[in-house]
Each structure stands twice: as structure tokens, then as C-alpha cells.
Amino acid sequence: MTYIFEFGWLAEYYPQILKGVLTTLQLIAVGAVLGIALGTFCAWARALGPSWLKPIVAAYVELIRNTPFLIQLFFIFFGLPSLGLQLGELTAANIAMVVNLGAYSCEIIRAGIQATPKGQFEAGASLAMTPFETFRHVVLVPSLQRIWPALSSQVVIVMLGSSVVSQIAAEDLTFAANFIQSRTFRAFEAYIVSTLIYLCLAILLRQALVVVGGFIFPRRAAR
Amino acid sequence: MIEFSIWDILRNLLLATRWTILLSLVSFVGGGAVGLLLLFLRISKRKAVRAFAKYYIELFQGTPLLMQLFLAFFGLGLFGIDVPAWLAAGLALVLWTASFLAEIWRGCVESIARGQWEASASLGMGRLQQMRYVILPQALKIAVPPTVGFSVQVVKGTALTSIIGFVELSKAGTVVTNATFQPFTVYGLVALIYFALCWPLSKSSQILERKLNVAHRNH
Image (cartoon, rainbow over all chains, first blue to last red; front, side):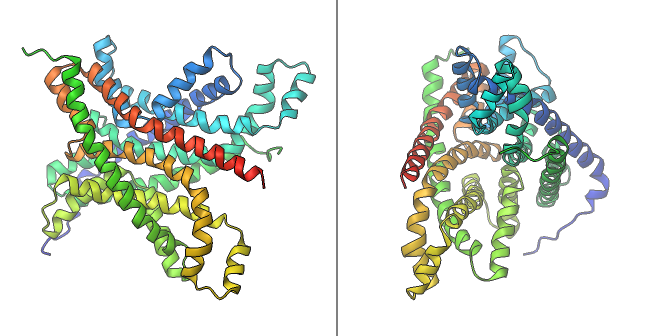
């Protein structure tokens, strides 16, 4: 093998890489916060919500969970403009990630809600709380705590999945790698470096979510 | 300008779906074989072997599938091999699938009660015999629902191979869009075809899981 590895371009192109990393982080930050919020709402709707809402949410969840993220992204970015909804690439990427994580986290959070002992709903009702108040003040936080590890893994999976947003020219880390590749023809080096950065991001994100979990859930869940 | 009917679009997409199905099957079967090997490494008695499997799994689960595809596509070229897109796609998907299946199956093997290992050891069975006759038959039962569930991820994963130029359903969607200028219809249909492939798998995974839970409750 006569190929000689060459990483000299790193010095020249690190602003691109840095910008890519920041975009990826921004995407997952927005995606995680809004996606989990959407997922919580959908989980409430599917587990405890009004009966007319349940089939709508179920259809949304099944549709998203059984189609590739890439196609969802293309549909939002290329398909929706023909309905008159023109979106920038970052907005489209953000929406796609929120919609995607919303569906997955719905199922995860719903499992947490359904694992709540029945007595807690009854206890809430006996304190004259409305069903929604019971959900909000009694059920929600322990439910989230129960499934926090699974939810964290899903957030990491969505972060790694976000690498495809480069396909609609959103300038994330993968976009930076493609850019460097096309300028320097150092394809292998560019992709190995960005792969390692993704690996570090995944490990850091997992740790960060453990810390965040510790903040949101200072007490142990009542089992 | 040529007019394209819905049927023209759908027919072309369905022709490309064959490649999505074929690639999914190859990845799943190949990934299953490599995954089984990884499973044996992951629960080996030797620490170094266990560590290797652990880091392999960590590496493939902690990096984007898209990057793995790029590396297979461009990386193999460094060794002077001319890599067609289907080879890079198949290779990356097999290795990626293996890492997830190995981890799923490890959970199943570890859920088998310790006494089963001890009992089979006391009958003088070797490690491979224990696995073959005692542990795997029991683990298999638990492993079916999550494995079927993961096959959905494999089908969806094949969509990424369009990016390195393998012509399957997603790539066909892009090509047809460029010809027809009807992205809404085309990507909508592409999504529905993926849904038609994946939903039966998701549903059967759920049903199998429910059956398994019922069976366990009767013990």
C-alpha cells in the first residue's frame, strides 16, 4: 500500500469543522428539547388523552417510526414547498429532528406512564385533582425518570442520525467533512476525523444527559 | 414536456424497492452471522476478547451509519480495491447491523438464569456445548421479538446507501423527482413504500413480544 496519510489540512480547515460541530450541537439541542416536549404531549394523548386524539397520534407515531429519517427530511425540505411552505435548510433539519424524536420519545415516555402504579392516579383523584393535574403533578416526573436512560439513548441515536441533514446542505459536521473531502481529495482522513468527533460527541452527550437527569430528578422515583 | 402519471412514478419506485429488499436481507443475514460471532466474543471468558467486542460495538453504535458508509466507500479504495457502491453499502450495513444484534442478543443470553450455566457445567458440558444445547435455545425465544424489531432499523438504514450512490428506493425517489418535478408526490410515495415494508415487521415484533409476556406470566 503506497497511500500516505496526511492530516496537514486540519490546521487550515478547523474553522469549518468547528462550525460543523456547533451546527450539529445546535440541531440536537433544539431537537432534544422540543422533541421530548412533543413526545411528552403525544404520550399523554396516547395514554390518557381524549379518544378522538388517540388514533391521530398513533398514526403519526407509526408513520414516523416506520419510515427513514432521510425520507422525512426530503419530504419536509423538497416536498412541502409545493404546498407553499418554503423552509430554509436549517429550519427544515430542525423540524425533521423534532418530528422524528417526538414520535420515538412518545413511545418511550408512554411506557413510563403506563408503568405508573394505579394507586397514584387514584390518590391524585382522591385529593380532588383533575386527571390533568394528576398527570402534571403526580405522574409525569416519575414516569420520565423511569425511562430517562432509554430516552437518553434515543437522543444520542437522533444526534448520530442528524448526519444526513448534510444532504439538504445544512452545514453540520458531515457537511464539513464532505466540503474538506471535495477540496483536498483527502476523503479517508476527512471522514475518519469526523467519525472520531461524532464518537466523542456521542460519549459526551450521553454523559451530559446523565448530569441533566440528575438535575431534573433529584429524588429517587417512588416505585 | 413529458407527463408522468402516478402509475409511472410508482412503477419505477417499486422496481427500485427490489434493491432495498435485497440489501436489507443481505445486511440482516450477514449482520446476524457476524453478530453471532461477536456475541461469542462478547461473552468470552478471556478479558481481552471481551474488551475487543465491547469496543467494536461501542464504535459502531457511537458513530453515524453514514460515516461508516463513507469510510467503507472511500477507505477500501485506499487498498487499491475498486469499490462499487453496492459492496461498500453491504459491508458497512453488515458490520453496523452486527454491532446492534450482538448487543441485543447479549442481553437475552445474560437474562438466562445462572443456574442453567452451572447445571450444564455440572453435566460436564464444554462452553460451546452449553451454548448450543442449553443457553441459546432458551435465549432464542426471548431474542425473537427485539430481533424482528431491529430489522425495521436495517430496512430504514438502507436508505442511507443512496448517499454513496447505490440505487435503491431513496435514490430512485431522488432520480424520479428530478425527472418529474413532483417531490411531494414522489417522496410521499417513497415514504408509503417504506412504511409498507416496515410496519408489518414492527407490528409482528409487538405481537410476538405480547405473546412472550403472556407465556412468561403463566409460569
